[in-house]
Length: 219
Length: 219
DNA sequence: ATTAAAGTTTAGGTTTGCCTAAATAAATTT
DNA sequence: AAATTTATTTAGGCAAACCTAAACTTTAAT
Ligand SMILES: [Mn+2]
Ligand SMILES: [Mn+2]
Ligand SMILES: [Mn+2]
Ligand SMILES: [Mn+2]
Figure 1 (cartoon, each protein chain N blue to C red):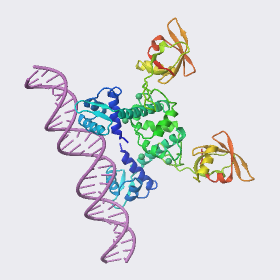
Figure 2: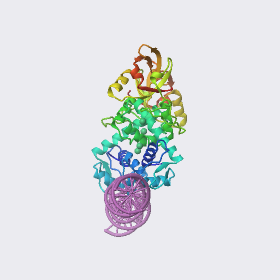
Figure 3: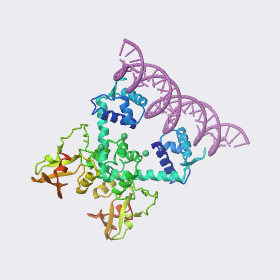
Figure 4: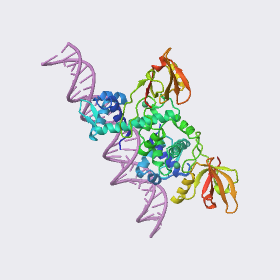
């Protein structure tokens, strides 16, 4: 099929173009891929011959429909492996990238199907990024701030808007990470804090400050 | 470190030499690696320069101590991934090879440590082959035929001596596969059959015929 | 509108890992 | 022991993916 190098180029084009829409520059690619612009030109000629990109010399490159399909497949694999590394092998979210970067190139349809099943069909990766479906669709989930949930409502943590170690340690202590299931148990009107149950079990009271920094998607 | 091609050569030399002892021929390698003898000669010169093999032109090749260390590391990775694929992703033992052949080349010490932990430090792979330890030791476990176990004794299935579909389907039905924990519950002297508990739960009665075809190692 | 600067491509080279064909060494026959 | 067959290596090439240096386009500045 496609080589590891080709796959990395396709993924980089996808990311730089913001989902395949805008045209991407040679230097842009050379920077994200840590290669020289001359090498990028070489590869673009090759990807163009394979009809994976629309390439107009001196005027940038864009993925074809087929190119986008391939890109989403690689991203799906990358993010599923990231979930595996964090949830099953207890990697931290900042340790997963290098390894997922390698695993995303393993070729086997069955493998990725079974991995997805094993992980319970996750919809977001440990960085809160959405995982493309098997059909190659990337649906951006509607994200709501935790503070906005009503009593009884559930959500899955998809993003935290503060990366200071103190805050991340706090989240760690109460057992909240990306992918955690939350449910609002009660509202405390006095200071707008909420009682939240974590992963269907123990509940904690979170201050309005904290509630504003956590985002969830529908479960 | 080492390229995928180099790693595949090292592993092939290890296997053909029967654990690193005998010298291996160029044509032997070319057959197992599906390349031409001329390509093998090329690579042997390279591996020799890297001190991974002792290579005497026209007289075969052997792994150095360092080469053996590398070989055992790759084999460890290969077999751990095979266990993962079978036990966690429900691959069958004949579906795992191609995928493990790719995964064995992923570079990350942490990954393989955590994988080993996640799998519960397995000692044999789904084909019954021993998994080298982290220290690079390959201890052949003592194998006993299931028929020879006394009451109360436990064992882990490591090999079955009949690969006819009917027999494998039978094992599948009663829940026995490589890696399954067994314990003798009772002996039935009348026909030398045994009552065996499978994975610490339900027990079945196995005929002496079947008992002679299953081999176990100490748990 | 020129000119200068920045971005991009082409030309020519390198390394890795493979190939075929030819040369050479080792093992077998006669 | 010489001749033949088989095994292996060397020579010369090719494709992939990178590189540097030089040439060429586009864009920005004068
Ligand atoms: Mn990658
Ligand atoms: Mn990610
Ligand atoms: Mn391999
Ligand atoms: Mn195996």
